[in-house]
Amino acid sequence: MKTDQTELFEHTPVRRAVLALILPTVISQIITVVYNMADTFFIGQMNDPDQVAAATLSLPLFFMLTGIANLFGIGGSSLISRSLGAGDRDKACQGAAFSIWAAAAAAAAYSAVIWLLRPALLSWLGADSGTYRYCADYVLWTTVLGGVPTVLSACLAHLVRAEGDSLRSSAGIAMGGILNIVLDPILIFGLGLGVMGAALATMLSNAAALLYFVLLILRRRGNMVIRFSPKHFTLSGRIPGDVLLVGFPSFLMMLMSTVSNLTLNKLVVSYSNQAIAGMGIAKKIDMLVTAVSNGMTQGVLPLIGYCYAAGRCDRMREAIKTAFLHSCSIAVGGAAALSACAPLVIRAFLADEVTVAYGQHFLRVICLTCPAVSITMMTICIFQATGQKGRPLLLSLLRKGGLDIPFMFLMNAAAGADGIPWATPISDALSMLTALALVLPYWHGMKTGIQNNDLPAGREPND
Image 1 (cartoon, rainbow, N blue to C red):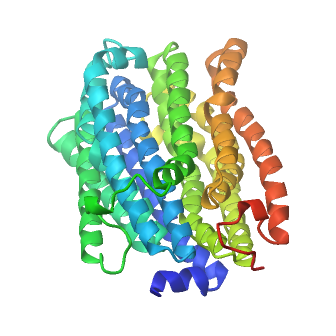
Image 2 (cartoon, helix red, strand yellow):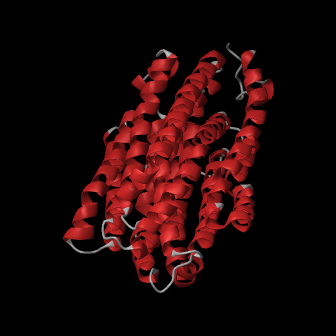
């Protein structure tokens, strides 16, 4: 059955197809980062470093929800796009159902564990007498009560995008982000809830995004392979393995990112709450540029996977080159802008001069890594879209946890708080070099057709 999405994957000029897929995704990613920044901005307007620090300390637990969503969402997205490219709609439907139900179960289990272990976890995160109560409120609403809607809304966005409907997928995420920005001042200041208001706004916005996707899929179920009915859920046909093994590098990256952030928080909070607040603000701002790279990869992944499964090497290579060019250009320009405007943007969040001093130093250092991140993320995307397992797993391990944690300790020992942020550009530069060493031979193989041992069953190169 031919659809508008099939036309986009197969016949639309590549540059236009790439832009149609990545622009909505990039915009939704930017809005997501903006609403995360809005939480920090509005909390910062109370000029209380303890509340800003509490939100920063609690974020690693919340970010693991994104890891769960990526495990099933990106894994399911890759399987759906490759199945559609191979003409197997039944397998695409089963992959979607498995991703949805498994994601819901995993999110519920994670939230329950966090609820049971929260006292020990918050102390381990670095919460002290000034931040513990705020951390507890933030975790309750964002991670415990908001766990399932947060995971399912993000997972469904990936699955809808896999069918080529990037615009509606991104609209749901953007709608949730805009709602969060609207709710933040109402709940934080209007109702006087402080950091708890920011957490409640996040939970409500993710629940609204989930409702949007449920209604969208039910309304368009005749034209989509995504199904909610449990009868489509299956553990056969290698579907669980296809989803989990492809999605695992993204999950592992988020897991290791969480461990990395925990390590960073533990090291920085030992200096002062102003230091952890400044670092938290800097990382939120830096996420604006990395969100563009993330949006590019998520947007173009279905096109790469579809063309790969259809044997369209020429179209796949052109899509990769177009996405690479846009991603790297924006990363370089964004890094330069953040470095030049660091004092101004940090001061917009919090007027405390000690916090501003820490924040601008952190931002200027970590923004150096933006171009390297764009290259590594696009390389991981290529491998995931084509169903590879080992290479994206290695890159995910190196990018977060494998290199940056050891360098954090080394730089902390060498230069204290000012040295810690340098672990990020050093580790990301090494990860980028590894990514290039892995992807260049793979790219060379594409020049003469997809390597035979990487072809989907029954397909021949069509270059």
